Length: 465
Image (cartoon, rainbow, N blue to C red; front, top):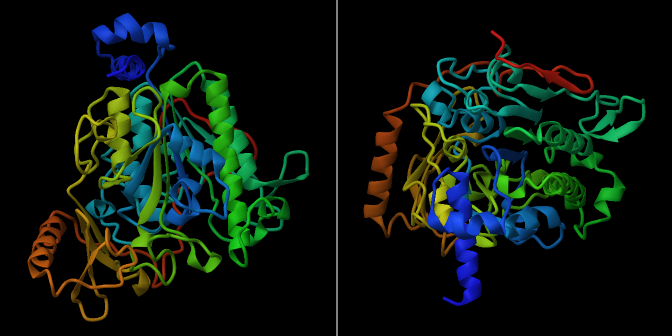
């Protein structure tokens, strides 16, 4: 090992030791002199972007939409190429993330918007609040029942929903009466939260409405920064705006020297909106007519934690959004609550453990009140994806490493693999509670807990009962 490599190695191991409170000789002799020692528990930031496709981020192969800040995040962290959403679409995706468990464990087998999340298990926000963190939330909630607002499930600081102009999704009315772009205002709130809590450990959940439809509201000033064509051009402008907000976060963390003391996790809540020109390349699929294909559940994911995990690397193991809760618990130095399905992924990203975070991942969307195109039964294991055909109930098997577009069904050639994967899926399904259908055919009218409209923030120092 040359001297430069040795210095980098010692700095890396020293940073890991300090963050997790472990005393090591390298940390004392070299690490303290080479870097700023965190004065508090590491911060945790989740950037949960609506409908962000795998093929719509530069670091994952996109060439017509510039995403320099998300790309920078990938360069200073780990690009995770096999990260999944276990409970699409939007509401179940958010519920399972915040609870750290498959939604089917509490009866949510599809959209089931308005279904309560468990009261007897802490949300990630409640857990982090009780671990000594200031918990903040910006954007879309879409979790739980009408009475389970973010303020009542662990968030101490919640940004009010800025009033819309003429019922537009993204065009807002600023406090001075002028017109604003919602995504940019959400980003400003993110900076404000960090500025206000820079001296304390914080947990921030940034869940903007972007890049959900209608992207047609994206102004020309954003669209012209891309080379995207046709219907994709409006979506491209919306993605550029999200990337700008990631840049604001990175800038404020750098300003206050919080980069090495902050874990950032970025991903989408499900695959891209195909109607708007979103891409899951090299995979197929997404929202709408692509829900049976890989692209609906396979999302871009980046984890940044400079000094604790290596920079500019790629992790190809199976992981999912259920793992964020477990990882946040490890960063906070607290024991993960019982009932969580996630696994702390930091050992894999650090290279301390090898292989997948999960041996297998499962999907079972079959809520009878959901549109049938969203029903999904599938398993991921190694390079294989097994999916049940909705028409005849047969299993189809694809080798995603050789065939990412799922164009060649190999079930007939590998009956042993089909039998093994389907057996594990059946065993997993037996551990779940029965489906709890709510609402009406095509989706319930409920929208979950509400965030009041207005300006500024809602503050609560303890959970409201």
